[in-house]
Image (cartoon, rainbow, N blue to C red; front, side):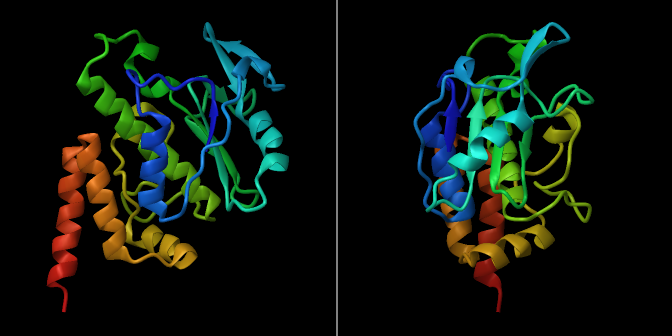
Length: 222
């Protein structure tokens, strides 16, 4: 995980929360690289609809040569708003399926971006945390070769708006879960147990309840 700029704990998940969730979701060791200063990045920038943005494609170009030899993939996380090229207004995140680098932004996940911010409350932080974890796992899923899902409601569905993203589950559908299992070979029950602990720790009660249902199903399976 490559932080690009600070990740204020009062606004969303910390880097420790991101890495702990990624470890539970994918079952791999996760390491944090030194934080980069976004103002020092040699990437294209623009002002769009009054706000500054960084070119996500340029960020990935800079990341590819820096992928550690012992890492399967690398994902950057930033509060800077992103766009992939001049034909797009924005992207929540961007990843390359074969080059194993990706980036995602918290910017549009926080109500303050839309001028609707009641102040730092537990409810807002929970909302931003849920959104950030879903986007992060989606982009990392791409780096395991999984494209956008069109089979079921799924964490790997594509989305073009925050409303569309919020309707999608945090979990892969059975088809994409099988693809992930083929790549990683994890124990499904152990994975769900790890996720259950994460959701309780993060206060994501509905997600914890969903995982508990999956564990109950596994326990009752012949």
